[in-house]
Length: 161
Ligand code: MG
Image 1 (cartoon, rainbow, N blue to C red):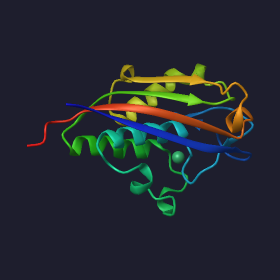
Image 2 (image 1 turned 60 degrees about the vertical axis):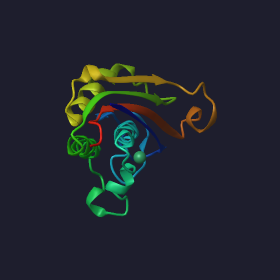
Image 3 (image 1 turned 45 degrees about the horizontal axis):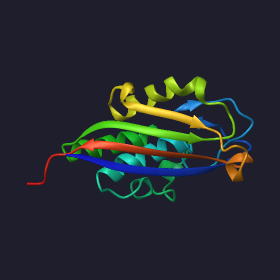
Image 4 (image 1 turned 90 degrees about the vertical axis):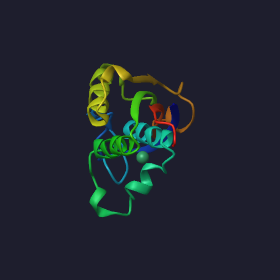
């Protein structure tokens, strides 16, 4: 039976940090603030996959108070989500995500992001959807203070015995 999960994340844009989105380091005057590499897109995808499994969010697996996760690439979190799918004898069917950012432009990097997320999750990148939109200059995203991402994931799970 196919189970669906949802994920949402937001990180602040600050000076002196790299801007990593979907595992791609994108040249930008600001980067995302956070304990890990703050890859907001991978975090939303991770929560969507975990949500489909009925698992708690990424922070329960990787507390941001734990120095082990300081500065880690977020593909580590996706790899754990993929392990959780396997642990429940599941199969990840697809992921779809939207990035909401006033800047930088992400469309040129979308194919690489799909590759990175697909590789981390162990699925064909053609099963990963990524769209990007601006926030029409409205609110904190529109002012370039942060970037948000949302994602859904579907996981085929065996019927409980
Ligand atoms: Mg996050």
